[in-house]
Structure formats: C-alpha cells, structure tokens
Image 1 (spheres, one colour):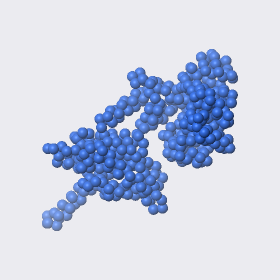
Image 2: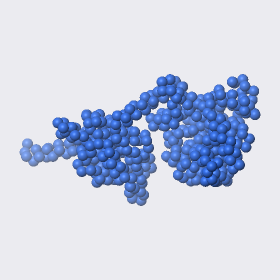
Image 3: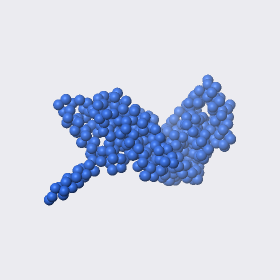
Length: 453
C-alpha cells in the first residue's frame, strides 16, 4: 500500500469518527459527544473533583409548529437554535444536540446552582426572540434542567438522569422554567411517581369517585343540573385534591382513562335524575388536542344510555388555545350530536371575546374571581354586568361560579344572571346524597327518587 492510499484511509477513518460524533442537521456534537465530554472532564478532575455542570434544554411547543409549518421549517428553527446557543454559551462550554428538539450543554466553569440558573436565564432570553422563517416569524420558549457534578451524580449516566429529572420538573411547572437538580427535587419527583402509580391502580380498581354540585336557576332557586367533580381518597395517601391528581394524569398521559371512568360513572348517576336536569362535565386540555375525543365521549354516553342533549361539556379558554383547530373540530362534532358546550372560567383568559366569536358555545361560566368581589368591588360588578349583557346579546346562557352567600346571590339575580353554583346552593356531594337532595328540594321530583334512596 502506497503512502497516498494510507493517507486516504486515515482521512476516511477520521471522517467516520467525526460523523459518528456529529449531529448532521446542526453540525453540533451529538449524544455520544456529550457522553465522552462529560467523562473526559470527570477523569481530568478525578484527583481533585472540582464541580462542573451539564444542562438540558427542551423547546416548548415545538411539535405543533413543526406540524403546522412542516419539517423543513422545523429543521430551520433547530439550526437557528443551535447557532444562538453556540454564540452565547460561556467560554469553554460545549453545545450538543441531544436529539429531536432537545439540546445539551457541558459547562466546565459553572460550579453551583445560582451560576447554573444565571446561564439558564440568559439562554432562555436568547431563545425567546422570534425565529425567522422567511415570510413569517415564530416564537418559542425553552425549559431547562441542570445537574452539578459530583453532587447530582459521579457517573455520566447518573448525572444525565439528574439533569433529565430537573428538566422534567421544569416541563411540569409550565413553559420557560429553569430547574437545578437537588435531593429535594428528586424526592418531589419520586412522590409524583408514587402518586401516579396509586392513581393508575385506583382507576383500574374503579376507586376514583364522582361528586355532584348543583347548578341552580337564580330566579326560581330550583336546581337545573349538576356539575360532576372528581374525588379520590386513597387508603394510604388519604384525600388527594383533584387540583393535584387531574394535572398529574394529563402530564403522565392517562387523562383519557381517568376521564372515561368519571364520565361513565357520572352518566350512570344522571340516569336516576329527572330527565330535564343536565349533567355538566369537564374536558381537559389534553382531550381537546385529541381528535378522537368526540367519538369517545359519545360512545360512553351511548353505552350508558344518557341522552346527549342532557350533557354539557365544560372547556377552558386555555385548553382551547392549545390547539384551536382540533378543539374547534371536537366542539363542532359534539354539538352536532346534541351535546352543549360551556366556556369555563370566563374572564381569566387573554382573548375571551375572540373565542366567543370564533367558537360556537352554548353557555359561559363567570369565574369566581369576579363573583367573590361583586358585592364590595364596583369594578367586578360592572364586569359581571357587562358579561351578562354581552351573553344576552349573543344568546348565551350565563352561570356564575363560586356563590357563597345570600348577598352575592341577590346581586347576581338583580343583574339578570340566569344560573349560579357555589356553596350557598350546595357543596359537591356523592351520588346517594345528591339523590336525597333532589328528593327533598326538587319540586318536580318523581316518586322514583324516593325509591332510589
């Protein structure tokens, strides 16, 4: 073999080695480069294990943008992200594309939590500027997780797992969050995992219950329907708030199973009520992103035998905004089957008026934040009055949430609000107690109610 052939083979081997450690899209190092870089720094500091930090960044909301504008635009955004990160990371740092829309950093001169948070805030700011796609600009945020060696792990795999745990916590807390791994965070995530497993088991065992809160006609003070609310009391954990376990089910991807169980139970209970009473049930943001939601909901109530015209589904504006096109399709399909749609927590979103124009709602629920201040605060009174007048013009029913005393009820009646719910009219109660409530207070109650309880 001559020298030219030897040189050619040597270059080829170098090229292959470089390719194996390089992300072909962005030109950054890849996951193999991350592993080797961390191990190299750890080995260099073995005799005097000075701290260093690794970080993970995940783009928030990248998939919907990728789906909307296409993979070419998604690739362009990823390349722009790579260039921005390279341009602004601290001296001596390494930037890596770990895969998909996740990037990683090795920060040899970042020794502790505050310094990691400072880097995270700087990178977050850099990535929040618009990305140029030619004819349009798009905005993204990013979530970050950091782990400091050796406190968060002495081996690469342990350190990466700690950074991933921190990133996962950031994603759970919302967009654009920064978390540095600690033992407290590890315990928090461990408790969340234990809670998840207990909830999954409770769903399988049919142990998650449904309670019902009356929604009344404010003029007659007669019950018009009930809102179904999830309740769970675990033998070991005790009472767990739905504000904890419902978001957990969404985050861990089993909200469909939970919701289907609750809807089935609620619909079965509603069959025992007078037929003119409606059942109100909440849909989650995850369900409003799933095109099969309408078919699933209708299949459940059809199996139970509940008339779709007795079902009202409550959705929040925040949930609608997550994927407006899919949500619109779901709402249209459900309304076509006779199901009524209610906009929950009205007044707390950023573009409520636009949603009322773009979506076909049947009812609006005024958030308790306004109702609780309606007697003492004239601004809240005027806001509620304006909402009622507007909904009247749009032929939408109005429900005031969180009514807790007679003065609030009287004020709402005077303003012309049609319906209300809250502790003043009844706390959430189980199915048997709800039947007893109907037997005692509902004028049109049929004899079957008495027999049912």
